[in-house]
Image 1 (tube, helix red, strand yellow):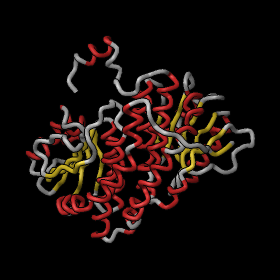
Image 2 (tube, rainbow, N blue to C red):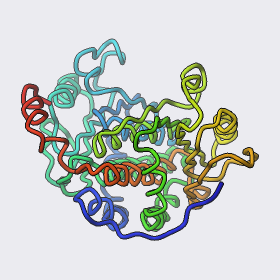
Image 3 (spheres, helix red, strand yellow):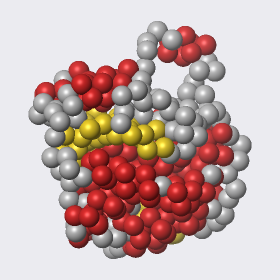
Length: 368
């Protein structure tokens, strides 16, 4: 058992270079974005409910955004854009002028996010969107801008930035609503850039774990808002490294699927301070008893058997973050894991496999 150490410079791919810019991007957003957050809070504050929607990584940001807005005293829920577009009255009650919809789409609204946005606007709902500095979101009443459009297919900085601007909105709304659960969001955002920089600086500590995952079965789990964190690991590991990672929310993993874990499999657990910390530790001890290898992101799990093969990627700053904000830090080691796994497998993390004619032509058969 041990805690990682080491420093690294992220170079060699556009994904790595984009990840390395994240602390500066966060500082920029936190320096200039509070005015935009106030405007967004004006628009969302009077809504009877807020629906956040997106696809893929943007959906994961929507999940975290919903946790943040609920902490601020807002009735918020996240819905897949495909469901909102094609089953609008089945996934939420009919939208109307008293509602608000937040559409997350980094490069611009693709088919289903665009349909969801148009339907919300047609229903008279307030529409706010989150996207890159150049994204076009026709029909949106306000676009919260994040970062320049990424050139790697494995989006990283845009995801972290989207969660950050939503956290800024939640901080403002929470202060207006006097919501106790959101009291630490603004201060937590203040320490986030340096915390992300510190995590990125320990990228080399992830390398042996990522290398050990090549050819292994990998399971990941997290609770509450960090269920979205491990789901993001799945997308990043598959996009960047074409790797297999299976992830479920903690109790979903425990109630049945955990039986598939075998000795020597790698289990990734997000273990940060919060309501589910002890339950996460219990699951970690069960996995250790099964003979699984553990990679723990956050704080060390106590009382593991001495022979357990466990490494902790320490996030000491997480103790100063509200649990709803912790995914903004915990996602960084997940990005590093996906990047280092791609490097270990000799896979270009930037191309979305479009450098292979079979995949390039196959993707050409469908419109995203």
